[in-house]
Length: 209
Ligand code: SF4
Ligand code: SF4
Image (cartoon, rainbow, N blue to C red; front, side, top):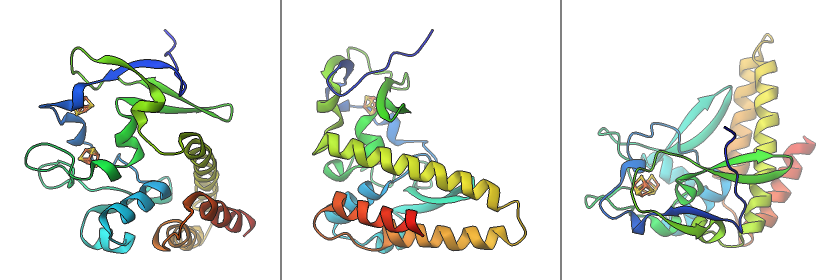
């Protein structure tokens, strides 16, 4: 059966009453909670820490997949997110990354648009219907979606390039340099006031290289 897809104005059964007594999606996630540049910006603002400091303090880690290095939330030795407090609550709720905000929805990128689908990992019973846009709790939702589309396409192309390059002699070194440039451009260099405008400038710069 084909998965039902939702858009921002659709109603979907996700309201889980503030997750009271449950933190299962903050545990055992390994390196899957990838942090995009907007997430990193939101974290640096919310925690008043630079991206570099978050790496040094073990709040974020770097992970290589298909030749692309991207940051993700760190899980501690008990395989719990480092931001999960002793009461089982998210200690950075206002600044949590996009993937945490949408759960138990996943994103599907299709025909230049973003659709959402319901994951069945959240077992909380009695969930209520909510509008997708309200659930994902992100300012300027549509601008954010445009950013996500741009970032998704860029990383997809970058991954494609990495796959080809690493087959070539010396390709691994080239990809290492490209990854360092990517991290420097989109993560290590602080954003000033308008994240989206500045992201676009940086993306254009990288695409023209
Ligand atoms: S699994 Fe569901 S109820 Fe539990 S923390 Fe995640 S979203 Fe909340
Ligand atoms: S950042 Fe918060 S919501 Fe996201 S996995 Fe960690 S504790 Fe859970």
